[in-house]
Image (tube, rainbow, N blue to C red; front, side):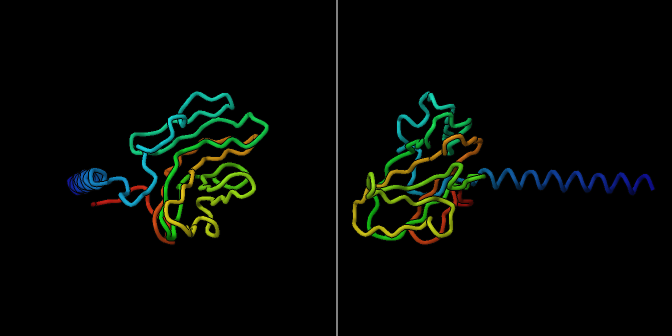
Length: 173
């Protein structure tokens, strides 16, 4: 009986070891999505600058943006991520951030200024896809934290051509 238990434990340990090796191999072939128009190389210089509104922003080497704190300002805080220039066509923006809502915090894409500004929110089924009518249209990607909102999340901004949201990472490419 003791021998059977020992054999079962040995088999379980071997399976766990093989699973761990497989997970390590999968992680080694993970890379950022080459179709993502938002690139860490194009992030705004002021993205991670010291702030006076109670919010801290940090970025990883692959472009993830971690935002923490409480918006102590009386108005919404807009943090510029980057500008993107788009050709005619359809595009979808997403962030994979947890807790996004239009009354707390969100990632958005905006063109124009003032009353003529058009804002597209990420991660909302009805507003995350846009149609660009003219070539070389400049959009700005923002993280918006609403007045008084607390945030502790990581944005993985993705903007891809087409009507389907893209992944931040791809595997095996």
